[in-house]
Amino acid sequence: MTITKDTVVTLRYKVSDPKTGQLIEAAKEPMAYLHGGYENTLPKIEEALEGKDTGFQTTLTLAPADAFGERDESLLRTIPKSEFPPGVKVGGQLQGQLDDGTQHVFNVVKIKGPQVLLDGNHPWAGRTLKFGLTVVDVRPATEEEIAHRHVHGAGGHHH
Image 1 (cartoon, rainbow, N blue to C red):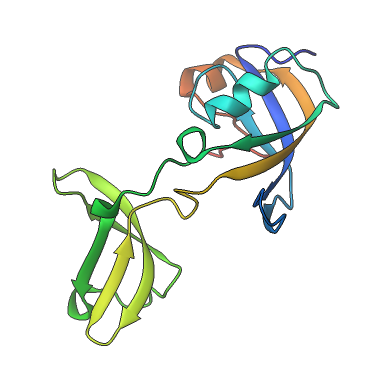
Image 2: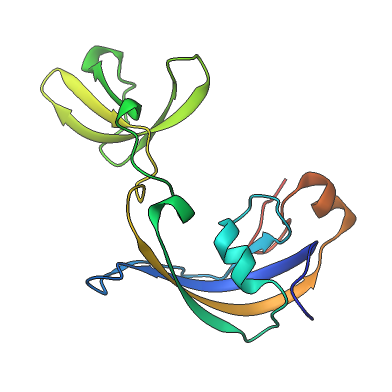
């Protein structure tokens, strides 16, 4: 089956640093996403896979603007350790608010004495990344998946 709007694409992927070749992440299990502009994967990945079939392999090098964006220093926060929830460690995440009051996820970067440093950027923001992609499966999306705008079941979201 060909990858078009409203198909479920199952991929194996690897992400690496294009300059050093260092592996950043390799999926242990294939991931599935709903193809067709549902914001379930990066637009440049969808563009590269459009019209392709099971077994297709490609490598993409994406600049920060096409991957996880440039770093935004306004998303750095320092909070008193006294306001920090117990049990959360460096590498963990906290729900917080941006200056305009909208909810946002912050990564715990460092605990330094009485202060906790948080970063609201994606960990890969500001980085050029190389994606190795292999299409494992393509199937039509169900009406429910299209209505919910994401994949259900194996490799996708579970309700």
